[in-house]
Image 1 (spheres, rainbow, N blue to C red):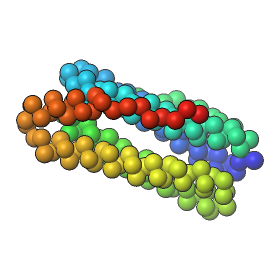
Image 2: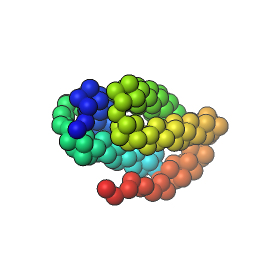
Image 3: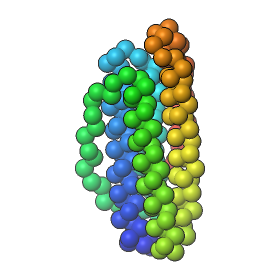
Image 4: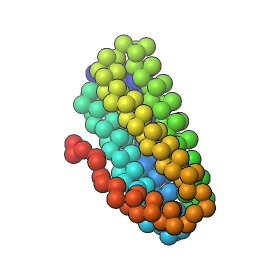
Length: 168
């Protein structure tokens, strides 16, 4: 049976992962609105990954005999500014998620919940990748500056992103 304190914290994280999905979907819509379909595609896939993260935690709670309690998902913004500003916002969001995952892992350690520690290791590693990817795109956007043709090339590159969400 899942520790009740850990269960409550994981339920909070499930909500935050669904919010992350919603946020990236909103950023995708923003990129569609400013005619950057490759950026929109990239963020749409990111949204799906966040839904996968929420579902992974959802299934984990159920597998441990816990009770999933879904809460309302907050409304994200609709205007994210320039591509650089949007990715900086995404990185800031991911850094917050990293902090939350770290706190959740520390709680699992404190509660001697070894199965949750193992499950959360995947999320710890995933956050390293999430932050690295956002930083890479931010660095590329800074190099591009105001060069519209380079932005269009990056837009095409981001359009090539493939879905990598494993089937559960």
